[in-house]
Every structure is written in structure tokens, then in C-alpha cells.
Image 1 (cartoon, one colour):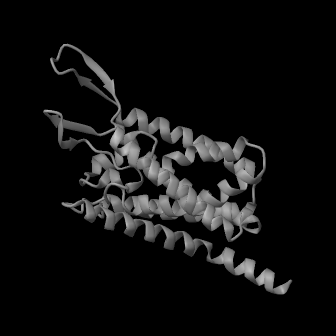
Image 2: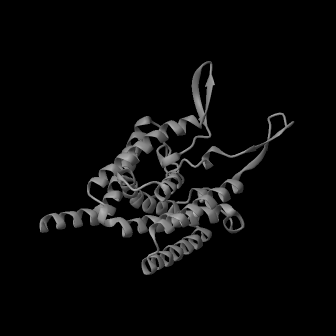
Image 3: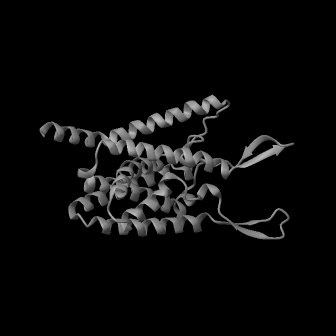
Length: 259
């Protein structure tokens, strides 16, 4: 990351997000229509990603070959899970659950996708120009995350009157629950190595929700190192979401004071 190809993609994302946001504000299309576009973008993104990274891998004896999708590419990251929320937002009936969902999507789409663009996991090991621009995966990765940023901002503009301070706490609760589930998922898809029934090592670990490690390996050597890291990312999540909810708190207390 932070190579010339990454900076080019950052510039593309900034232009795409800025232009799209300005156009949405100018023409104000119906929210359902915007969500329909988001559904199409999400499906296309997942299709492009899957067919870009799927591999044909030989068996151990070389006698057969199998189609294989690495577990790190499963749609279990926060930004991938947003696909489910996008479809629910588009097709479910209005109600409390949908209101809570929009309150969750507003900061998590914006913050999560923006961080993903700044710290692209697909570029963590370095990337060449051909890998960055002649493969479908980078296009899917950066454009899909840009769509999520646009969507998060648009949800705020179109639903800000429905947002309340309580939604900060429902958002943090939902985010915490998903992060906790990721602990199970990360272990479930890892490959433990046992000797005489004793766990001696783990291979091919996943990192959904970044609950196991940062994008850059911090080199944990003791379990308490990881506890400190977990507390740090939880505190950072609380702070970032709180920053996005400052306008909500200010508007709510101003209205309350006026009444």
C-alpha cells in the first residue's frame, strides 16, 4: 500500500465519491432508486471479486484439480456484509428495524469503506501496475468501497431527521456483536495443527473485522498484547462513530432546548 498504483486508485475513489455525492444532492433521486443502484453494484462487485480470485488447485497427489476460493475472500468482512443490509433496506418494509439499520449503515459504510480504501488489504503485500490495473479485483475492491462511502453519506442526507442519539448505542451494540461473532469465524476457517492432541500452531488464519490483527502484522507474542489491541480498536470504533453522530446529538439537543 501507499505505492503509486495505490495513490492512483485513491485519486479515482476521491473523484468518484465527490462527483457522485454532488450529483445525488443536486438531483435528489428517490431513495429506493438509489438503493436499487446499490443492489446492482453490490451484486456485480461480488461476482467480479469471486471470478477474479477463484483458482483451480491440484490435489496433494496431483491426480485431480479442484476449484477453490480462499476463505479470506468470503463475504464476511463488514463491508461485504453490507450487501445483505443494502438488499434489506431496498426491499423490506419501513419500520423500527429498518430505521436502526440505516442508523448503523450511515457511519459503518462511510468509515469502514473509507478505511478499506486507505488501507487496502489486497495491496498489503505490495502490488505491481499490472496487478493493480489489469485484474478485475482492484476495480471491484476500490469502486465497491467507494459506493459504500457514497451510500453512507446519502443515508445521512436523506434520513438525518430520523436519526437519534439512541442510534449511536444501537450502532455500537450491533457492531460489537458482529465483531464478537468474527472471533468464532476467524477460528472456524483457520487451520490448526495438532501434535499428540495438543495444539502447536495455526496456519492460514483469517482476519474478519480485523479482530485478530491489524492490516499490518503487529507481531503479538503474548495474549495480553492482543487484548490491548482489541481494546484499542474498540475505543477507536467508539470514537469514530461518535464523531459521525455529533451532528445528530447537536440537532437533537437544540430541538429539545427549543421545545
